[in-house]
Image 1 (cartoon, rainbow, N blue to C red):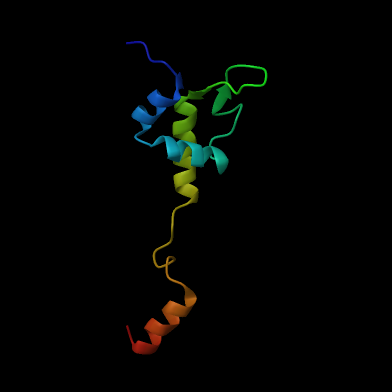
Image 2 (cartoon, rainbow, N blue to C red):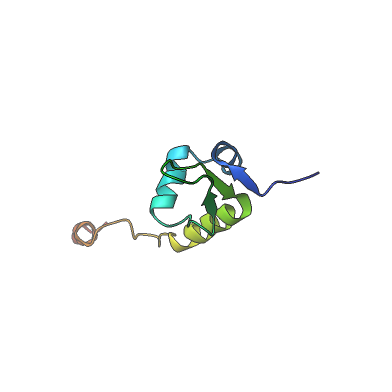
Amino acid sequence: MITQNWIELQELVRLLYLSERTIYKHKKNQVFVAGEHFYRVGEGKQKGKCIYGLEECRQALLKHSLEDKKIKGARYKKKLLKEFSSRGL
């Protein structure tokens, strides 16, 4: 079986179970970095399409997930926690 590492957006969406919008958000937030996780094909005034490294993107998502892991109880604001403790909850 031949596996293909460098793929187009639609294939990346399908294989990583993400939406196109999520891919674009990850690019904007520097989870996917140009030259490391994807490259752009084309030249001149018109933007070309991006070609993504499947394994590179997968590893970036795993790293991002670890860094973004929330600590239990961290989603509550301090004000809300203070209110809970005053109520005895």
